Image (cartoon, rainbow, N blue to C red; front, side, top):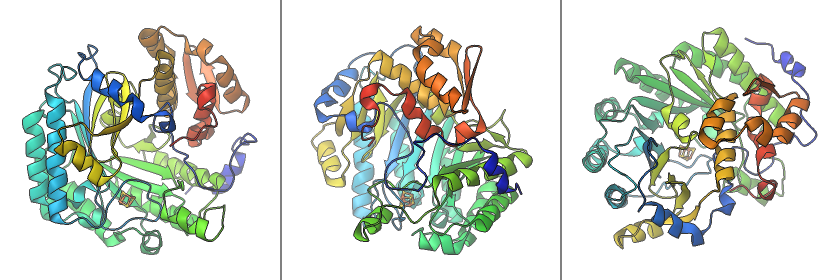
Amino acid sequence: MTDTSSLDLMAPAPAQARKETTAGNYFVSNYPPFSFWKPEFVQEAHAALDRAPKPGTPLGVYLHIPFCRKRCHFCYFKVYTDKDSAAIKAYIDAALKELQLYSGRPFIGGRKPSFIYFGGGTPSYLSVSQLRSLTDGMKALLPWDAADEITFECEPGTLTDHKLKAIRELGVTRLSLGVENFSDHILEINGRAHRSQEIGRAYAHARALDFPQINIDLIAGMVEETEANWRECIEKTIQLQPDSVTIYQMEIPFNTTIYKQMKAEGKLVAPVADWETKRGWVNCAFAELERAGYTVASAYTVVKNEERTHFRYRDRLWAGADLIGLGVASFGHIGGTHYQNEPDFEPYLRAITQGRLPAYRALTPSEDERLIREFVLQLKLGRVSGAYFQNKFGVDIRQRFSVPLRTLEDWGFLKVAGDAVALNREGLLQVDRLLHEFFRPEHKNARYA
Ligand code: SF4
């Protein structure tokens, strides 16, 4: 194991680094910030559906399955733990109707999806028959035969052998297991529904079923995490030999149970490790995984075999792919317009029943905002190619971003070499907070979500 005292050698963070974990968003998943997406722009998303796609733009489908066995204390997603089978059936029917509303529009332009993502919530919460009716319906509307990646998020405790076999038969190529931690105590105290025994059993069976790619998700800095336990988590992960490992640093957005508890107790600091410690834990995990033969592929991901293991959903989205976002609170991008669906169950179902697309807020970024979006998202990979931006936007990123690039260079996190921009490990470990330097002035220091 890496001695974490080596963390002391990391470049000092600039003055604005948040040391303690306080409430708010850390992870940057899109740009411009969601707080700038508005109901009055939804019409632009509708108009985009009537235009033919830009030639060569890949199309993806994301479906949010908002059901979970329990709500984790750190969860900030739209999830329901109280829906019965009738409500779940109504939801599946609505998602299929929603896809139907898209499928005939000029925006599709004869395209078939090249990637599909089932996220949540817990997609594996659905029964085998619910999964079959859902995916049969989706394939009938937009066939999956051109899709080279179908990702399915799972909570280990929901995976019976029978269900895993069915998931494999549906055509899933990338199974993503929400392990988060291997300690039963930490899983319990953070409100997770599964336990370590279920991880081992589900993983072994998934391996036996020969899924092309199995990813394990971990979270660095769960409540009561310790260095010793984190090291054990890394060891156990390496023993399993997944194709990829995704590690998030614990953040406490305002809609989490942990934040509500903090507020009730009048506390400003969350009961989790500070940011330096969390970065140190991810650094340690990356070093150990590299020693075990893995390669760091992004700020959050290591892969066992770089040639074979891809994450098309991420790479295509970060390069401006179109995405049909289906389901409650889902995010999509169509023909240059971002949108998000109704964030609550009943309004979502009502819109579909009325034959309307359920987008409730949207934004059409300017050309410069699109450039910033792709630049900041691709910077999470650790390296950005100037030629890509020159070809696509006709812009030299060294000039467009000369000020923030110099700032990050001065802070010791980044180098510009030739036409490429590359973060060092220290920069990569805290990339999300550095990305704000590239935002337009009106988006800096603005509410993100
Ligand atoms: S399993 Fe995932 S989506 Fe469900 S409550 Fe936990 S963190 Fe949220």
